[in-house]
Structures are given as structure tokens and as C-alpha cells.
Amino acid sequence: AFRLAGDDELARDFTQATFIRAFEKIGSFRGESSLSTWLHSIGVSVTLNGLRKTKRQRNREAPMEEGITVGFTRAEAEPDLKEKLARAIDALADKYRAVFVMHDVEGYTHEEISGVLNIPIGTSKSHLFQARSKLRVALADFAAEWAS
Image (cartoon, rainbow, N blue to C red; front, side, top):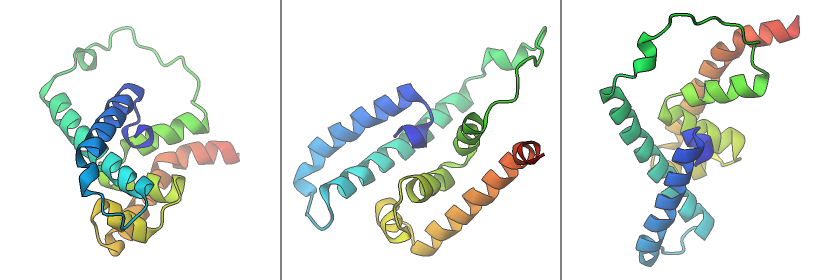
């Protein structure tokens, strides 16, 4: 949940909601896949739905900080690669981030991702390609600095 949510507090909420949903639906577990795969699919679903809900709520609220820029100076150093990568992954659209995290971080196959997210295998591959492309663009400046 944390890798998809990118926020510790949200991840805790989504994890709790995942286990609540799993306990409610344990009778529907048919044993066609492993329990961990079934639980993971519930977790992905709960997290993605929660992120959509959170995004809608945030879009309705106008953050005050956006209008306050007086006295702001960029005195901070360039963040290291890990921080930059985490921010770039968090900036991906939910559908791209879910496939990227499941495939490249957690090691799921496209077939497994297809089953968990209820998308065609080709869509999983396409979303992974798009996610990697967007990450390359987001990290291009940092990569150029690091290489020189």
C-alpha cells in the first residue's frame, strides 16, 4: 500500500481497510490463487479506490500554501536519487504507478497483474512502457548531472 500511496498515513489506512475487506469477503475466496495473491488484489483495489477518493477531495479543497510564496528561496541541495525516484513514481497516474510497482518493484508478471487489476495483459505491458517512459523524462536532468 505504501508504494502505491506514497504516504505513510494513507498506506496505514489502506492496509487496515484491506484487512477489513478481506475478513468481510473471506467466504468468497475460492482458492483458485494463493491467499497472498487474493489479499494483494484486495489491497491494490482498496488503495487505488482510496487514492481516487483522496484525489477528488483534494481537488475540491484549495490549499492555502499555493498562494503563499513570499520569502521562499531554494536554498536546499538537489535531492538524492532515491528521493527523486520516489517523487517521480508518486507523480505517475494511478494506473501506471500500480503496474510499475507491481512489475518492476514487487516482481509480478504481466499475467498476474492482469488478474489482480482486471486489465488485459497488453494493457499491463502498455502501462508499464508508459510508466517507464515518464520516469525516464522525469529523471533525465538528474541522470545527466550524475553522469557528468
